[in-house]
Length: 261
Image (cartoon, rainbow, N blue to C red):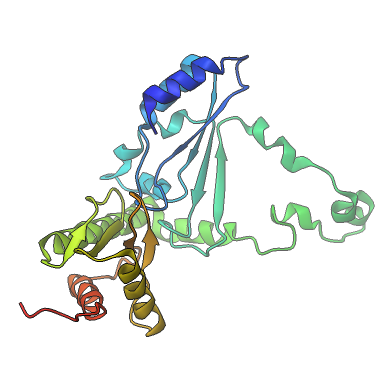
């Protein structure tokens, strides 16, 4: 996020406190980038704007003593989104909304007679709305609680450190590879790369080949208008050999095949 542009926008849209909302990001989906959170929080405080931070991906850095400083300013947000199926190793639906002021959660007390009729509750029938925010769907919070109780912050933090280190290792391998280009150094655990001189069609074909042959699952991103392969490292058991093997698979999938080195 461009802080100067944000300042201009908040100035131009000035209104009563709390009428403006700024949504910052701590860990973009494409490259894992983190907005300048302290500067954004300062502008929101100066202009009386509410601040929401989407930390769905990057929020897991809070668990790590080494990487937590990257989220300085997160505590100044009014609301924060966390998606623990990423750097939390939880089921895909396990997300959290953290709020500074519990009054922001008053909407959750909405009464729906067809879900939680008082006479049914008094008669002993289960109140589904009170079991999960999504009523009859499974309460994934139990799995989050068990994981935290079992591993603790230090245990989960160690896993975060491992996947971030593997991303750095992969970036180093790509940087040294004669036929691959690295987009940028990883901010969290996502590495973007592409075959040198390849067209977007070739990049897309490489990805589909690896996927359909069951060899590797890579994402895709267009951070600069070009198509890049996206490797998001989330398995703490991934080793250097796995990373080298992945790049070899990419090279094998190129139309001209691998080059002897």
